[in-house]
Image (cartoon, rainbow, N blue to C red; front, side, top):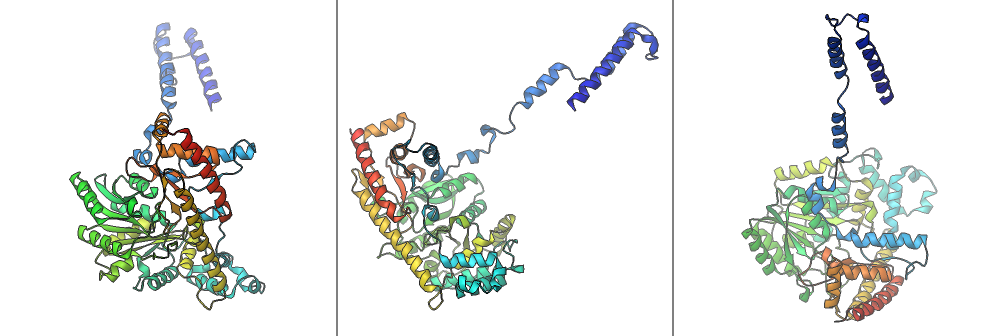
Length: 544
């Protein structure tokens, strides 16, 4: 195109120039003077050409990128997600270095203790769940004789049941925006069996893990920065990130580390009053039980106090219960907030409650399958209609995740062919997690200046580290939070990846890090050894 334009321009210029000096070849304009011919052709040429300075201006304007960091949505810039932040980026770079240049660092492998991603660290999936998924995704093998010898009878039967609930038996097709009705029936029955109170499948919204459900509720609740969401500190960064993305205000309430990360209603009242004095309308209370990153399991009496607080103050209760299967303390038991509120006499219409569950945690650890749900109760039909509208914008969650969510809430039962193998796999995983938690807890508590509450549940430990002033000043010089500086030094020296506590929030002036208990049991001694050796050297180097 550019060549054509240049050729055409050259032709016009040549003809115009010739005409200026040979006016008898033309009849325009009426006067035969050279000046008039010059004026005529100059005017004609100007219709075809833009002055050079205009081209320069356009080129200068077009050199500015259409999108820069400065022109991004400021809510995105404000959003942070520490679990996959700077430390993890550094770990990935170190891993690439090790692959390209073995022996280039004082460790042979990166030990990821930063994220709750069990299967990436060697945990095996539950056989029954995977058998059912395989059969549902390739139903033609259900009619083959060989299948009877390769798959358990109850996995084959369950696959048939699920396929009969899916229109066209097509796992690759869209479903209802809340999820396949038959699967929601199964989940509702599982909730009812767990709690002892009725559950309605129409209250269930299947989602791609719990995270999209959290985002959905934030999108519905937050109208402006004047709307606040109560969040525990320390908190899972999904909540602070989601609140920032949707333009709201995080209203913190601090868990009491001295009482095993207890949740005190007096702290809620104090923070609520402060928020209201600052013009913030607090709309919901997030409770993570069992706790992430803190690992505590709430006592039922404490939960009752929280329900009463939400009822009195008119707050939506957002109950993050994705670790409900991960209970390690023998004196602790999981109680859902729905069970607690119903046992207090509050019915479906008395208190707005949203409960989140996921297939990513528990003993199943199916993070990559992206399955989960939220159970929504206590909202008017008009509000429910808006929740459904927001869900429908995303069409539906993935079908494999939906199937897994139904399996998690309805696993094999006593008498089923798969029950023994299923229970052995489940119990083996949970018992191993409990041992790993105890080993790491004891190791952390043996370190100078470190104290760690017991992991009653979930998948994490959140030890407090008391750093020397010299180390804190060194961190300030490096423009890092002290615990982030500690974590980066730990990584560079040992290959162990933890997440600084500053990414989760903490009482000002205190420092922590989050460490998962997920590396395979045979690797825990290496983590303990590396961490112990590093910490001693670190404290000696920076001793005041």
